[in-house]
Image 1 (cartoon, rainbow, N blue to C red):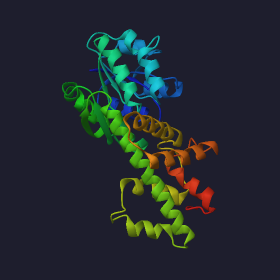
Image 2 (tube, rainbow, N blue to C red; image 1 turned 135 degrees about the vertical axis):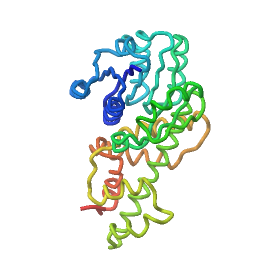
Image 3 (cartoon, helix red, strand yellow; image 1 turned 180 degrees about the vertical axis):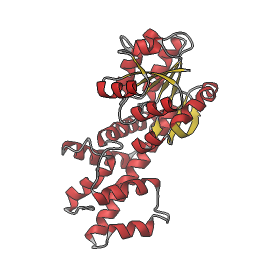
Image 4 (cartoon, helix red, strand yellow; image 1 turned 90 degrees about the vertical axis):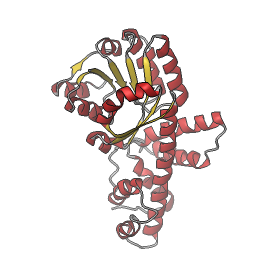
Length: 294
């Protein structure tokens, strides 16, 4: 099976590499020439446009920053649909607004292209080791057809409902992750200000009810003041904005999500938008005058 892969960023590049390792024939495209060259050296074919990628592929995977990027790459001039043959499968693994997924899915259906929205969770480490959690919206039959392909990139792939359901699930995930990181930052700032070693607190509580995958991943980063991005603040701002827009549209209040987004917006304004979302610790450092880490 020949796979097209468009979007070789922090997440997309390791995902594409895992497909190559699994023996899939890959044709790739990205605006980052260095990333394209790296995949070429590993055996991928490269093409200068999404249209040409689609012309050569049975399945096209997109992994892009936000809704406008997906619309441009799929629907725009030189886009996927211009090069798509009837029966092409589009798997959009970007994290975008559910309504945008539905819009793109409708346009695909008109061209007899079948689409899934399949955003992921796990950040760069899990993209690298192929253990992402993948949330999928679209036809169940199509999901069953490509499930093995998805599991090359993830440890789990769950069908969540029709087109848009994957991204609705991802928004729920991002709300929970953001609030969990904020809670960890808040609690460990309290610990530091109270004069207790946060490393000992982490060891004491990680096996109890407060323990979580988020805390296990992000508390050590906060204690080391290491905010190298696995998932950037700016991307989480985008996801929370999509969550708030979706919540407003369906009448679901999201007051804690709004607060977490404003905290991240503060960090963006301070020049930390490119940091890992664990840098919410910086927000508490700013308002408390106390640093959790070194």
